[in-house]
Length: 143
Image (tube, rainbow, N blue to C red):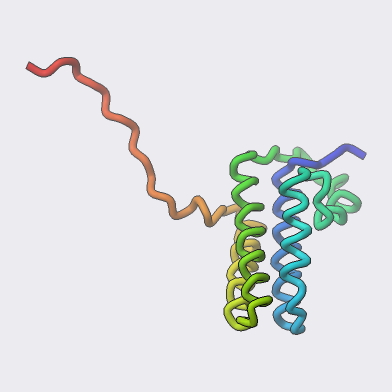
């Protein structure tokens, strides 16, 4: 089986799994799901895509069916994964501090961000950045 580490489809699958797990944790009142998912995604961020346990089902059953896998863009991938770890980490800290309501809200925001990326490929962390204009060409010395 050919490796799919580093494909856009694999990352989108992982973000879909994040969304489903976090929403399920909210619906079924499993507040510990945020730290578990944050840890799993954080390990993948540090050790690389081969350590992504949330993508194992993709590697096992879906990867052989993917035609023409699209390579992921590394900076964009890091932003997606870092956003997941940061928001779920913050939700975990708030949960430990006893602020369950705010923790759940931040977890649901992350689930929405993950679902948006999984379904459309939109990276919300970069979607709202200001567009930079190219520098104006110099017309030479002014008289």
